[in-house]
Image (cartoon, rainbow, N blue to C red; front, side):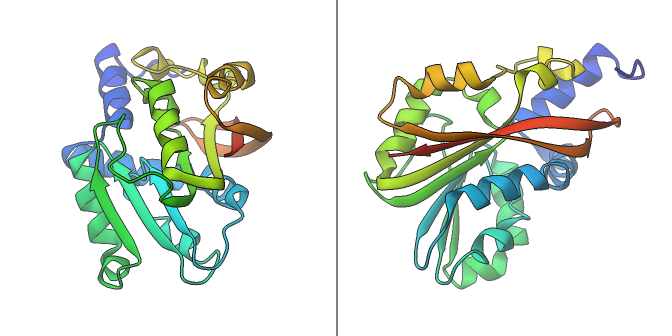
Length: 221
C-alpha cells in the first residue's frame, strides 16, 4: 500500500468509484474502463451472445467498451443503466452513433429497481459494481425478473482476498468471494453455471501495478 494517499483522498476515490460525478468522475471512469477491460471482456464472453439478442448492463460507467459487446453478434440491442447522471451523459456522448442507430440506450435507475418489464433481456452483465449494491438480494432478484427464461447473467468482481488488500475498500465496499456469491444467488431463482477464476495485470486506483485475482459468476435463469 502506498502511503502518499491521505484518508480523505481514499474516501474521495471510493466515492468516485461507487458513483462518479463531475470532472473527477469522468477521469476516474476512463481509468476504470481501461483498468477493467480484461474483466469486462471476460464477462462479455461468458454471455455467449447470439444474433438479435437484447443485453442489459448495470453500471457501465462511460461505456467506452460498448463496441466490444455489439461486435459479439449481429443486430444486438444494448441497454445501460447507471446511478450516476455524469456517467449517463458521458456514455451517451461517447456512444452517440449507437444511440442514433437505436442500437444502444442509456437510462438512470435508483440502484435497486430496474425500469423494465419482466422478461425483457436475453442477457445481463455487470463489472465491479456488486461491492456497491445497497440491497444486493433485491437487485439480483430484479435482474432475474427482467431476464428471459434461459437467459444468462455475468457478474465480474475482484476476489475478496485480493480486494481486501486495497486501501480504499474500507470505505463503502462490500467484498465477495465464491462463498458469498453462492449464498446470495442461492436466495434467487438463478442457478450458477460456473464461477470462472481469472487473473490479469492492472494498475490499482492508487497507482500500483499488481496481479489481480477476479472472478466471473455465470448465472442462468
